[in-house]
Structures are given as C-alpha cells and as structure tokens.
Length: 79
Image 1 (cartoon, rainbow, N blue to C red):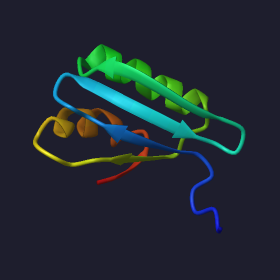
Image 2: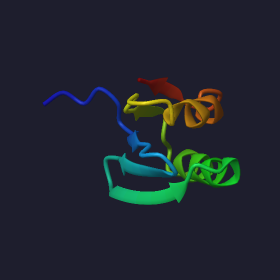
Image 3: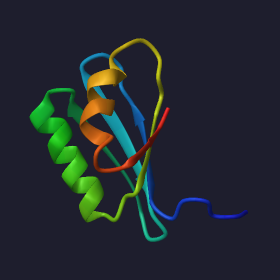
C-alpha cells in the first residue's frame, strides 16, 4: 500500500467531544477531548508535537465547524 500522508489524524466530533486518532509511522494513538476552544487548542498542540500535517474530519451535522475553524490554520484539513 502506498503511504499518502506520513502523519495524519482522523477526527470524529459527536456533539460535545472530539475523538482523535493519530497515525504516524511509529505509533497509533487515540485521544478524546471536549469541543471547548482551549481543549481543541491543546489537541492541536499534541498533533503538532507528534508531527501531524493532515486532519480528516467527519462532516456530519454542524458540530465539526468550530473544530475546523481552530485547526485550519495549522493543518491541511480534509472534510
């Protein structure tokens, strides 16, 4: 299988939480946080420190929009 993104993260945003699964060549890690801006910023810092470059967000409902707004300046965000 061809590696397209070496370090990426998938996000699910079911209402008041964000579930993130980060996959890198060395690890797979999952974290959950609230959708409050401070928590999403901490999540963003975690992804940057892990070398994350791309984030994919499931775009069901409208709960993903504030999370997208916070992350779009630091990552390539894919809906």
